[in-house]
Length: 276
Image (cartoon, rainbow, N blue to C red; front, side, top):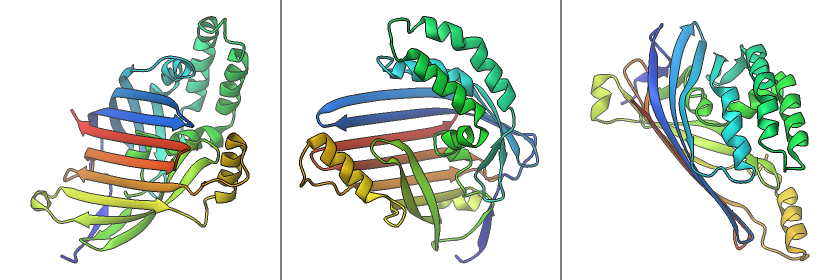
């Protein structure tokens, strides 16, 4: 099958509801941190390339330590209006003033929840600075679920069945190096659902060694281990599977990633999205 398919949100004035589950396991020199997030969300097409994403329900298993801040700050993402760029990725947040107002409304109560935390005011100031920097705030969402699922760069792209397209992803907030750049191979898969107009797409990724700063990671490992000679090579496994309906709206999604430096650092993440 060599017919070309242009993936794009076809229908207008449509919305879908989804359940998203994200599980993460982190370990740094024997110190473990695990968490599980469950969200009910709604994706709604507003006009042209403008969409809204609403968080209808939010649950978080681990609310200890810094994860308590994550549990409280999700409210800033309860309603986000997004413009999708021509590259199919998140281009702009259109309702930032409303999000800034929401932060001002909840800031005081959150700080009262952290009266014993000597870092609380500093963290709150960081949130304020993030929201005052539009480009930085947009980038903080661009590579995280669910925004990187709905605006992954697949939409507005052309695919031929069983032929490889090349793309890119980023794993953000990675300890020691800030983020992991990924090169992807993306392939449209022929299946029984293809006859109904549905699409299935598989993505395999590997570390982009040209963009990844291995020297920075090596220095980080040496510093924490306090040894001049250490194993510091980062290894990465990365896969995604998308299923789209006949209007090219996502109906199922799976992402699994594993990044590790042997005997030092381990980060595993699994994200599942399904229409409800």
